[in-house]
Amino acid sequence: RLANLAGTRTHAMTTLEVRQPRRTAPTRRAVKGQTRGDRTRQLIIDETIRCVREEGFAAISASHIAERAGVTWGVIQYHFGGRNAVLMAVVDHGYDLLRDAIDDVELPVGSTRERVQAVVDAGWNAFSNPASLAAFEILVATRASREPWLEEHLADLADQLARLGRALDPLGRGRRRQAIGNLFWAALRGLALAQMVVREPLDFTHERRALVDLLTTHLESRGRGDRPPRR
Image 1 (tube, rainbow, N blue to C red):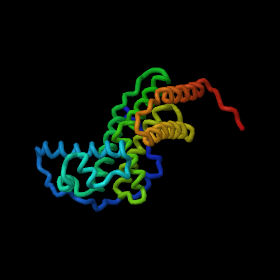
Image 2 (cartoon, one colour):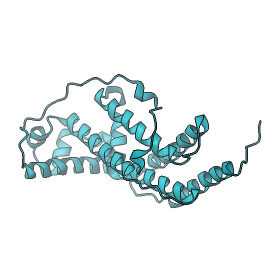
Image 3 (cartoon, rainbow, N blue to C red):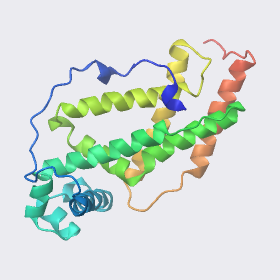
């Protein structure tokens, strides 16, 4: 499994000092068996995700979240404590789904193309789900006022992405191996950004196939001992 691959954190964000923030606390008490409350909380998160994807971050107001979810603002305060806490709950949710998608990858024991295809599919599934796209949009929009605890999420996510990227070239080493992983993630982020700026779903089947072809050709050429021309 991917979770067992060795690796170290190389992203710049992993060097940040993480502090415990002061977060607005919800007014409800934690009691076991609050199934109905959990459903209401998830409904609010899901509607906030849909609002971000359908209308953009600028549409996210306290009253609009309540209206879309069919609840009063008092209910949202009860479960979350405030608007910013709702947004951070969306980021948490998107982060959990993205990390689970990466951790659950089963890398095939086969050809280079099969391994590359599995990694590209896993990366795209992790990036392209609505919760992840909404979380990215919130993180971009709130980057100037982001709470420090989110940096821990970003650092851990960078570690997960780096390990998945390294799975492309398990026998490689050094800066070239890291560059392949960085290029892979840059390509997927570019596709995700293209999806974020439009409402209708986009089909990136051909682009993902081209990415698999390019990575496979490069990795197999290295295995044959081919070297790029010097400039």
